[in-house]
Image 1 (tube, helix red, strand yellow):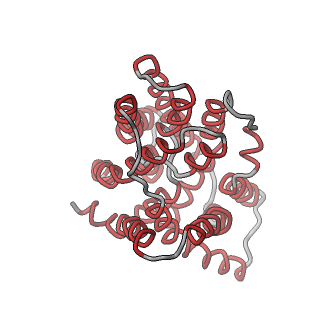
Image 2 (spheres, helix red, strand yellow):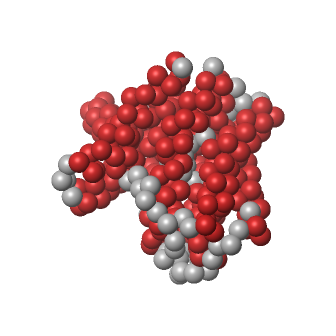
Image 3 (cartoon, rainbow, N blue to C red):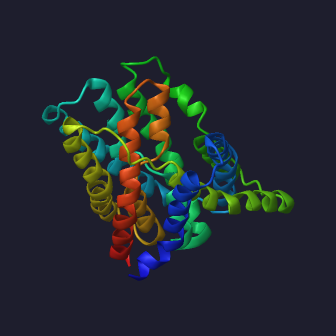
Length: 298
């Protein structure tokens, strides 16, 4: 109960975003512009600010390894359902990514609640480290239907680039001048609240899953919200994760699917309607499952 109350402000912001999108005549252009501002400016600033302030060590290697193992397990489980569902190849390729992609906005908000700046830094390292893995797998599945370059996608991903830049800056031993740090801090303060509002604004529960898509949707949601955290738990224990890194690994694995899955699907001519439905369903279900996972950790 206490964990659910702790996360209530973040989930309330998501629901507020949903309401604002539908009850205020701000226009789609407003939300598209806000999403771009967050994605290209505010969240990269938050990641850079948090990572450059955190001492780095090889202790992060098991954390990243646990995240990769959880994602790989989710991918295999998603592939395992292929022979049992009647989905067009393009539809399956589009929905495949919903089993393992993660919502960084929610992750950073929850990490801040759990462990403050140290939690944001750990989540930033893990999320940034998993960007290549997630994008390569998602683009590879869709690439048979559209021309796309995995490396071009990575080169345009601001979260990945911000993480790389922050790691290089940190490892080089450079400091961040106080005025610059204050500037980045102001941007970071705006990032989480606005990011959660856009998550809610993007919710779309109207969709034609169709009889052939319900079983696949149920399986993918179970993999993302239940199986992936279980894998992270057992792998994390095996590699000796504890404390902040263990908490962040489980939380990362339990996150709902990222809205970027829909953007990629649309860009590559995939089944956007079903992906949008899965993202929305995983976000709403995640409001129930994520507090349960966090309560299990305490």
